[in-house]
Amino acid sequence: MNDATQEIVHFELVQVTEASSSVAMELTGFQRGLDHLQTQGVNVGVVTTDRSPSIRKTMRETYCDIRHEFDVWHVNKSVKKKLVNAANKKENQDLQTWLKSISNHLYWSCSSSHGDGEECVRRWKSLLHHIVGIHRWEEDGEQHTCHHAPLTDDEQRRKRWMKVDSPAYKSLKSIVLDKNLLRDLKQMAVFKHTGEYVITGS
Ligand SMILES: [Zn+2]
Image (cartoon, rainbow, N blue to C red; front, side):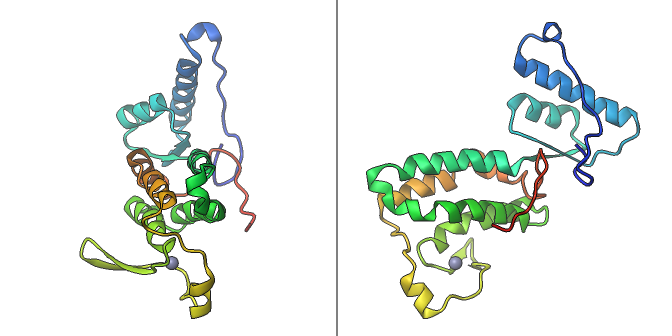
């Protein structure tokens, strides 16, 4: 799909007999499709896929001049699943009220980083400060602040901030700082999707 026009510009059919597994079929179809577009003179700048290991490897090795991005919706779905599982544990109940905000924050981190992968990671990690009620902090010798408007004293008092030493916060921290997630976020700062994405504002 051409992201700019949301039009399907090409598709490939792969026969079961042509590949050893469904994973291999996906890769074969992907490569044929991409090669076809390039042969036709289409200048492909960015390709967005899910996080399939074989496609990831092929993009890195064979198409290293094309920027490879991961679909934000897919990644959010997997992060959300981990968070819900954690929040369902009795000791992590405090996490429940934050689930929607954390998802929104992931989308915001990707959509507001203007293609800068490091900035995307930094914005995502800032959640660990905000969620305990800290909106200004120091990291690697630099001052950082949240990007939201300053909270009123009343807002700051009323919000149910998490406690740094609570099991819920520790669980959250391990999910937020997961090294695979941080690595993948660097490839999500162009804010692309594999399907039609409509911003609903919700
Ligand atoms: Zn904040």
